[in-house]
Length: 171
Ligand SMILES: [Cu+2]
Image (tube, helix red, strand yellow):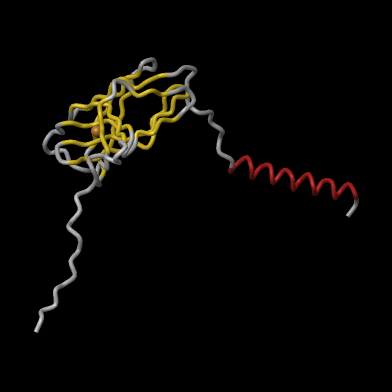
């Protein structure tokens, strides 16, 4: 093969590679400005429950979640803390700070949106309409699907007494 042919072959190969890259590469999307909500889930625990989610504040200023409302229950913004005796407490907080550039996880054992007095008939699989109000950002509404499982912030699951081995009848 002549030098010229080699060059053409090389260019052709490069063009193929470039074409493949172009077709398989995802279009690059810059992170959305403002507040982004991900990983939403809700849990019921009797007449109460909790909503968990992640809030990314991709804006130019610190913000805060100041209110959360649903159509199925009264809500409060709660924070779970563990005291010196390793006892979990949860208490209402007036707002949840959302520092700029950071993701705040509302999760079991931490901050959560408490559902108080969930309407009868609401069961796992149902969708709850949630409206979040922020100090700066515009309010956001979304649907949260109620999942199975414990809320994890009510002191934990009730455990059965330790399993007793079967007593063998004595003869
Ligand atoms: Cu709570």
